[in-house]
Amino acid sequence: ADFADDAEAGVTFLRGHAGIDPGLIGIVGHSEGGMIAPVVAARSSAVAYIVLLAGPGTPIDELIVTQIGLFALEAGATREQTQALRAAHAAIHQAVISFEDRAEIYDAVYGYYDGLTAAETALLGWPRSLLNAVIESRLTPWWRYFLRFDPALYLSQVTVPVLALNGNSDLNVPAAENLSGIARSLNAADNGDHTEV
Image (cartoon, rainbow, N blue to C red; front, side, top):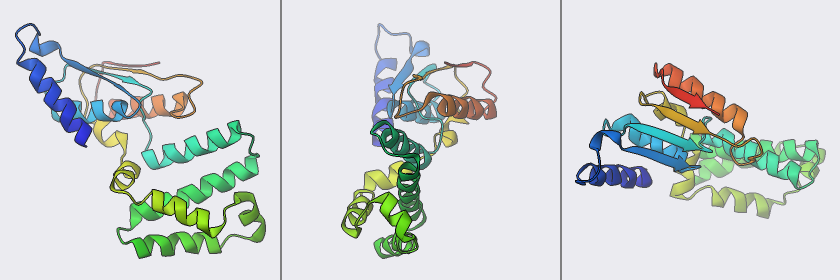
């Protein structure tokens, strides 16, 4: 949200510059910048177009779980280990999204963790100390905001031209599902000028 405010201030500054056509100012955003550009374009008529480079089109809590799974597989984890890891992170993220109180978050995650079978706990490979460390890492204000962010909320309000470019080998923002999500949201905005590649 802070970066979106900064980007919007940059657009405002450029609009006042004598050498710049105020009707042709766009925003190019990479990764998180691909989240920020739609936020600004959704709320400011001063943005003429946006370009999203590896921009997300799926809810961030889901995207993070996907990233974790892809990186685990890349590092040599089995599919079963990867699924256990994805499920644990999904449980933590759901608790962080659902509750404000730390004790409630811990209770929800411990309920999940304590409900695992011995085989599931072995696949996950997390002692409680590591579980606690992961929970703590997600309790910062930035992570709480990040996990609750859904790009569709903003993309579905963007009516200016959009070019979205994602890489097929990108494990952080997998191309197919994110480009599909971007297109779906822009179609919901009745945006007739968008390209996803």
